Length: 253
Length: 126
Image (cartoon, rainbow over all chains, first blue to last red; front, side, top):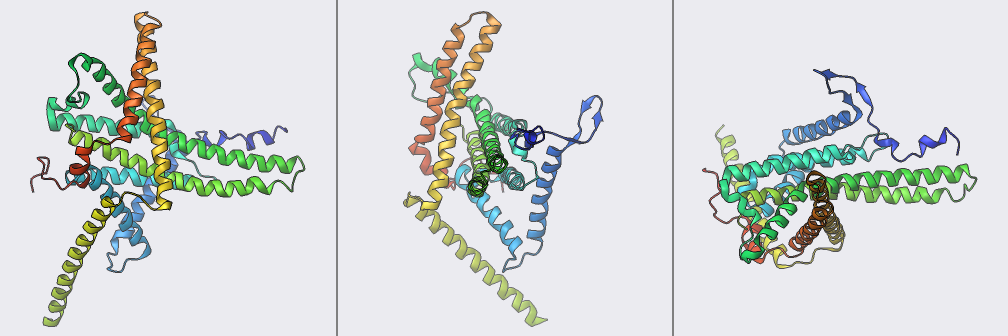
């Protein structure tokens, strides 16, 4: 209603990129933004949790060590069960991806922080790099046979051109769905939180102060739900990375 | 001194035993998990949600990509709207294909690459 109140309930406002330190390399805008800041925080958080967690190596682990070990075991089991023992050479990649996405999502849940994974360029950058890696590795490992991924066995020859087009479309949709899923979940969740917060403010402003705690209760429930979604989406991102790497390792299936 | 190295050896032996016991336990757990397919109630919500999101995005994205490719080809070749219609159909088929692959993982693959200890040719030389 009032001019000052409008930006406070603008649910998109939280995703605005702010330039913190203008930076220009040969005409390319490489400014240090709030998005870059929170990515750096996420990466450093993972780095220090793992570094400090693994420095003690006690037989009875400390809390931090237990965290690091659980994260390691969780991802290692996931890679092993999806890609097999030969996929373990991709374990560092999958582990870094999982921890980075998880850290960014969890940090983004704090008030006044920035949700990096609600920017589609970030998730798309991650997803397309993964797919590029699997393509290059698949061709490096299997040569021309890798393209057999697009040709399922036991198909009528007359139908083959259609099937191949469909399989190629399926393959192209992989990085897009991988990035859109993470991005859309985080974006929708954070918009929902702000919208509920806006309800609270508007009810108070309109004089229905006895109703205002209801959206607040909703925010509490939604925050718990967002915590679940954050972890889940990081997990799904990592699992699908494993699935795609598995396709590069064993294209014949 | 002598005593200390004895202790270290003893500790090493105990650690090795612990490691082998843990390995055996983990294998038993994996075998058990594979034999019983229904997850716990708290796990099933997360699993169902992630599967739901996957089905949704895989289907929608494939359709949209098919439509986009058809549209751009139409603009490029000036054949509107035929390639859009054709590729929309392909995109739909690709979306169904994605969902089908999600719903029905090939039975032959479940046995060999789930567990992953199969001696395939991809092992790096030790």
